[in-house]
Length: 77
Length: 229
Image (cartoon, rainbow over all chains, first blue to last red; front, side):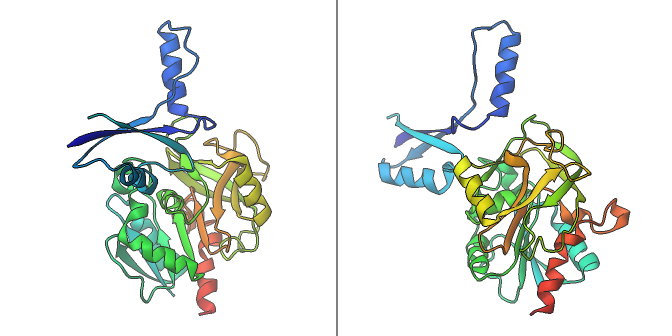
């Protein structure tokens, strides 16, 4: 069994309004060095055998929306 | 004229759509389950609002890949009328039937109030009847329309911007653009003009008792289509 991590992030050009709120909260806690926070998703998949093309297909078909998101794949074991 | 109101797990405006279409528009309506494969016998499709699949992953993401959507794509390609409201709009964008996407409102809050809309496109079946500024309700947390500048320019050029948020006098103001949508876009059309998606709920504004009957200006399109069947 292989664990594959898919990181889905909002495209940098788009406003992440939830991330902006989190950044504001951190700044209020005194972390003035903080410039920005952006929230993404981590989707952990367990596959019987890792096939990069198949996992990319999963991302393109469902896990990420190319209009608003980018994704990165990381094979853990 | 028989309209299919789609139902996904988590749809919750399906009954609003059903009763307004049947009682206030006067067309035949039937529910169609997301796991069905056929739209045989239907002349139009209404994709209702709600929280299909709990909004997991992204709003509308899973619903857009349900069995019935393959048929909706074929149906839309045949030029038949399809309308998606609120979550239904998100589903149509996720399915690739409409351009762009919808994100969390600029100020994150779920907004439930009446808004004013102006029809930018005046030639599609869906927008032809919207002569002046209309007032219909919104109820969403993730309705901020986004599209990059290239796409917006393309939508402008092709007349695919159906509705914009305006104030009561029809002017575009920052305050009127309640969710922070790109270019105050509230609804878009596909290139052919038979598929409409919008965040505001015309089906919740089909008689004065509901506070407004302005939704009729959009939904009466179905009667118009019916008369040509």
